[in-house]
Amino acid sequence: MFNIDSIANKFRLSYLLFALLLCATFVSIFMYAEVRMEQQLVKARLLQQLELSQEKEGDQPIYSAEPGIKIYRFDNAPSNLQKTTQTVQEMPVTVTTKNGQSTTELHFFNYKKDKENYILTYLENTEMVMGNYPVLAIFEHLEDIFANALKVAVILSLLIAAIFSSLSSKQIIKPLLDLKQAVETDHRNLTELTHLPSEVGVLARAIDEKNHKLEQYLKREQLFTGDVSHELRTPLTIIMGASEVLSSQLENDPHLSAFATRISTTAKETSEIISALLLLSRAPEKLDAPPTSINDIALNEVQRLNYLLRHKSVTCKVVAEQLYVAHVRPELLKMALGNLIKNAFQYTDEGEVIITIDAEKITVTDTGLGIPEVMMPLLYERFERLEQQYKDISLDTESSSAADAHYPAEGTGLGLSIIQRIMTHMGWQLTHQVNPLGGSTFIINYH
Image (cartoon, rainbow, N blue to C red; front, side, top):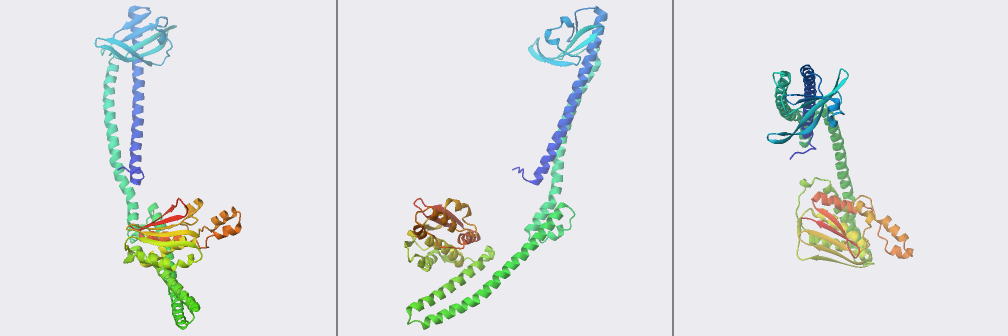
């Protein structure tokens, strides 16, 4: 299939268009020269015939000569010919022959001689006698030869243009293909192209410089991620150990023991979040994907986040016909699904939240306030929160206290952005739907 966006095809097309333009120019010049020469030869023959006719027949209103020549005194010429000029003109006429009627060209022009005006005409479908005017016969013969030669020249020109354009485009595109190959092979051969003085060398140097900056940036990011992970894991480990010791010492005080357990649980969750973020910083093909139970992670996340529903009339249930397993890192699935469930719990004041699991997708449906239409284009953008939108809604209500009752919990605006990043990392897909009766439905397609 011909791709017009290809640089090589653009070169080929430009060569062919140039060849066509050049051929059209030469054909136009040839046709113009042929017409002008024929007009001059016809004009010379008719003037010669006028002199011969006057010498032979004297002064007559109309002279007829064979073949196809007729000369009128201006007053005796047909009215449609009296408007002619001294330049030879052509007009289509219909003539009757033995084989019927046919259309041909009538050449005519105006000529003044000895204060007399004449209209000289020549019917093109007849041939002037070779003995009387051999120049025109020779010209018509040469015209056929030049026409055939011109056709061959046009065909050869287009063929040569096609071959030359194909060969030259390959040579022009070759440096770009070398650059493409160098970029695709981890830039091993890119250094060889940076020394070229051509535009390809300039592009290679720009890419090499950009790659160097990108490598430095990625290296700094990896070092930062590793340093943060190392520096945070140590205090988290101390916090988890201390909270377990504290919890064991407060067994007789359930109230304080619950706080100690909460500290330990939060520290463990933070450690898991750090692990998940570290996994996101690695290439997907370098990660193992063990079989992970979607049901277990969904139930654990519902139980972990159930505290968000303590003061709300909201029920939550997990619907699954059987145990479903996905090949994915559990830390990533836990973070993605946990963020969706957390959002559903935070933005739902009454009704229910349903997590449905089947063989192809995970669906989280809530009956909350939903997402405003103006926020849809920014749904997965970082640091974009629904807080301001709900503030605008609360201004339109009659009671500020009633509006505050439906005001969503404050967030950082990173939840959906992180989920989308996890989906891209795992090769899954996240979609959003608006529920007809209110609320939102987020669907994770994992097959």
